[in-house]
Image (cartoon, rainbow, N blue to C red; front, top):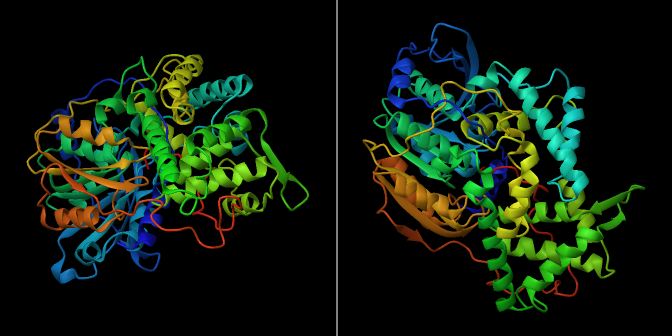
Amino acid sequence: MPLKKHRLLTAALAGIVLTGVAVAPATAGGLRVLTDAVPTPKLGWYKCYEIAECATVRLPLDYRKPKGPTTEIAVLRVKARNQAKRVGSLFVNPGGPGGSSTSFALAAPEFLSDSLLERFDVVGVDPRGIGASEQVKCFPSVRAQTEVLGLMNVPFPVTAAEERNYVAGSKMLGRACSTTGKPLTAFSSTAEVARDMEVVRRAVGDKKLTYLGFSYGSALGQYYANMFPDRFRALVVDGVLNPDAWVGNPGQILDQRLRSGDGAYKALIEILKRCDKAGEKKCVFAAGDPVKRFAQVADRLKTKPVEFPDGAGGTIKVTYAIFIGAVLGTLYSTDAGAGVTQLAAEVAAVQAGGSPAALLKRVNATKAARAYDFPYDNGFEAGSTVICTDGRHPARAESWPAAVDRREHQAPYFGRSWGWVDSQCAGQTWTVRDPNAYTGPFTKRTTNKFLIVGNYWDPATNYQGAVSSRRLAPNASLLSSNNWGHTAYGSGVCATTAIDTYLLTGKAPKDGKVCTDAAQPFTTPLPSTMSATVAGKQRPPVVSPRPVSILG
């Protein structure tokens, strides 16, 4: 697959990372019976977006009450190019949680291999509360939302004052979603999405599900595999969350269980060490010791942010949190090596009194309105709803600063960034529960083998999540890749072909297969116009200051 396609996939996966709370366990078998009690709906397809077909369907808000209140679920499909050789439908999910599956399916021609586009109808089912489905809405107005989210308007809190504001905002968000956000927040756990997908599978006429899920979508895939272990023909999870860790316990914050911060730190240090080894002819940040230089750049930003004119009469401030957030975002890319070292070199150049032109160009390229400006944007609320109702979290939001400090010690730079993603889920303030949530077990023997895919340098879904998920699954294969960035599909011929072949044939690669053909950093000389002393002549791929998607 062309690198362009993987960049588009990576961009689509850069969604939102959020959190969960204690819920009453539900058995897969009993609730599967309730799902089967729902009549197969007829989808009223209509032409949309020139290349697709759209439909909406009303499904039970509470599957225990199949004839009770309903919620509207949006479905989109891009039909197979070769209908005569069509295998069936390929359900896709981009992660988040909070990512739109209908938008992801619509973009399928930009990131899926031609072999899949030829043989599958690509189907996206927007999760409850998300995208084109009925929206989760925790506040009565944009103004009320702004007053709360304004307290959390930093990539992550660093100072004591920022932590106080963030804790206060987290508590207010949790209460709002537990009151105004109902009833939808009470019935939007991952288990509900799996049930909705199961009903839509029947509606599109597939005897069994074929599924490709990324990042948080790996949790959805594993939920489905354990709730409906005999109902998929092929199921791929790429960029994997351990589902037991996702559910967790009330004694740990989310990153203490998922260790995303560890994965990001491991990737960063490996890049800096390789930069040092490659030297100044191949790495723009190679002068001196890159690991120490990076620490110096970051530490200086804590007490002295970089400020420079924005070219429009104002100023731009690059704080420590903004810098680390941008580094984390860059680690999502297959070009992570060049991107991270270029970014560090640009900031170092300004700190040394050099031109801020490169940083200004970067900032202007990534400017976007805040998520809570007009119109009402529920992305943070929708993602939080999934995390906070799926899992168990500490009782008090006030406990997060100490827990995050411990994570920062274990995973410098990123323990703090990832550590704050679930503070709104504190059990005393996020009190709404989904009575139909599924909390395991995640060790069911499935009829067909499913495929677990992890890459060594993933900064969001730590590779160990794939390894430990494989240990849980009695009938799965683990495919590992040496690519950079978040998730493996599209990063190299080996991993992409193995995934495509499995989806098309149902034959999984041998358990433990390792792909080593992905592009690696610092293998070619820098352009002649760039040197270690003059940074910023070439801008790396644009990234968001804070990728929120552990998930993708």
